Image 1 (cartoon, rainbow, N blue to C red):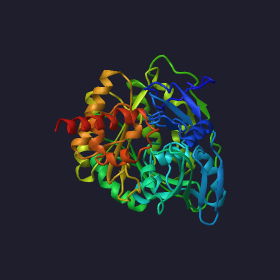
Image 2 (image 1 turned 180 degrees about the vertical axis):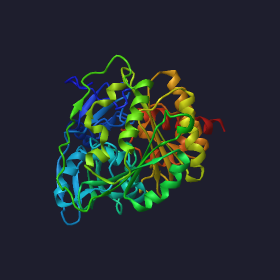
Image 3 (image 1 turned 90 degrees about the vertical axis):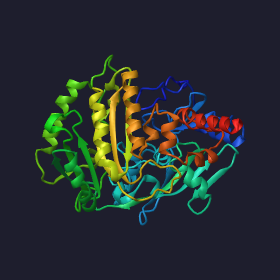
Image 4 (image 1 turned 90 degrees about the horizontal axis):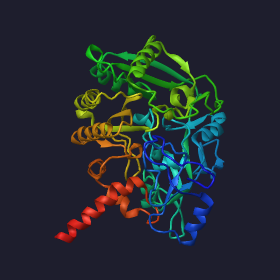
Length: 452
């Protein structure tokens, strides 16, 4: 907790908030002096990571939000440079009047530029544009040796690749330049297609990706019997004629306090899913949608994560290879049903083969499934471990920046080249996630070598 009483927690609210925070200016001074202690820092953007990759139980988080200037924008090329603490919504608002939009956006516009790079976030168009890191021109990085590194892909390439997707472990990202994409308008022509089961979705997915810039599916995770695996496939493209004005990024509604219990319980989710499927899927005709509603629907309710009650939520995101997806995805959903756990948000989409420049990047060719679960303690942890097992046995991976509890073995199986990032990690930077996964793997490896 900072001196002003502000909490620096994770969006899932299932892990303790950071005990100590340091302003960015103070951290910059400390790093430039070369006096930062080992494992004492980790950058903190806007707290939209679900797990503990933005936490440091043994040290301090660096509050980067005041570092939020947009430094320059080229209206001809779409290259924008901004401080690491600038929010995605501010980048959109700055570039939209010139006909540009970020090539990749995650599910919320309230992430910082530094956070989007550190997590190499992805969006609904991975099949065409890859990850956020694919569109990074350069990164300015401050390390604990006191030096500031300008890291374009052709200079300091090792740091550039390690910083993208490096979860803030290579140093403090000060600023970055990214390439935006030119769009005819911000409006989206959206179409919703019902599918009866997962088999029908898989039959539709490839053609949907080929024909559309954006594609993502919603699954009615609680439906059983003949409705098992049913859902809606949403596709979208930027409208040829529409608005170039960014909408105000505030929220119309808010959850002012955390209720003493989980509001998003099974009876609520059953009614919600039925109503959502009826409302969104009642017509298969294309319709015009505002970009905020299409890309960032949950941003309309500020602090909606509080609805999960005092224990918060866990999000589990996995990716499995395309060759086994028709078996693995139903197995993941069935595991959740057997455990009696309902997911408020169940999203399924296809990753393409556009490679990220990152050393460690979660997206890879295949299908990715995202599930949200209220934290019910050991019961939920057992389910998450089972989802990990199914994913790893399928040759897939679990998303680290949405995780708050995976074990070292799951991380190593998901990212077998994790030691390459460890070799480039700045010694002053450490997260709670890295401490409970990679650092434990390092200790085990050292013990094994000593025993030989």
